[in-house]
Image (cartoon, rainbow, N blue to C red; front, side, top):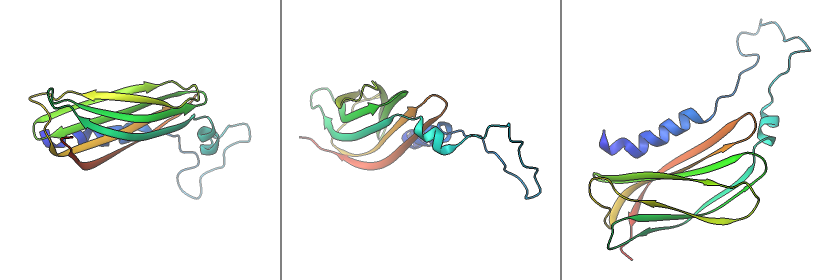
Length: 154
């Protein structure tokens, strides 16, 4: 179970991110909706989301402390909210963190410091997860990716 922490975080994030109502689902004999009923539009919901940028710039291991700093270039433009998340697991050492990004239209640098629980991070292979959640007025959408990386002893 301990080895699946980053993967289960990614799956839980992906499962809870997007809930859209389905209109007109069912059999072909379903009655059409009356004209006065408003139908949710995915295009309208997408337009309501702010525009975002998330680019991981570096994953740096700090020698004396064993922490890992994940630095990203982020930007959010429009009305809504934007949060990025990251997690790292290496054998029994693991941690996760998140940071909110202001939706002011400016590029900025954001850093999340991961401090291992049960030990410390070391150079070598690890599981790395990154993701984000973007919310507009009436809808939230997000993603999470999990990959294997090698922590460099720079």
